[in-house]
Image (cartoon, helix red, strand yellow):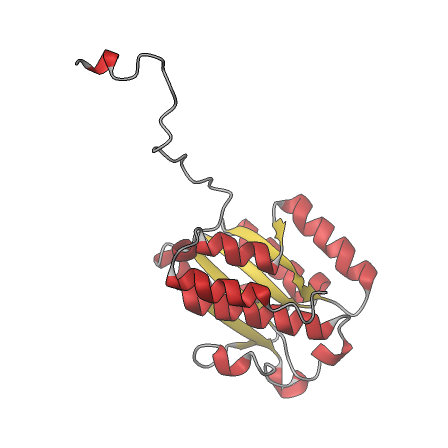
Length: 207
């Protein structure tokens, strides 16, 4: 049988998957950036317990799936260190900064580019200050920027909402913690999926 007769009805080949969209984050090409979730500032942030909870789930998911992680601290001498349960899960000594943008910690992003990381998922505080300035700098540097909106916050709703709109209009993509975890995971039926599934089932602060 020649090749032209193998599929005389031109039936679709269901065994051939579509190419994965470049809009979707890939675990091996993504960095999770945790921005300034610190002891003396976080209590003043609206819905701060949810932000810490979701940031912790993102960190746990990243550790499970091999997503690179970096975190920063804004003037820790005045604003304190990164809160638990995040701090003990983060790698190494965290860079501190006085500039609002994490772009001041350029070594993080130089290393990520060398490692083939082109996507950055951002969580942290505050939406309209450090997160916004970081996101805009990352976009200018050629990264694809994603914002986990349920793991980002500010002291006021107007500042938070307008900053999200500004970042989105500049090219950042809005997403959620759960969506990002499943996006990194890509498929069910793996040991990693079992861990991600358990993270997603934590509903205590999401009801």
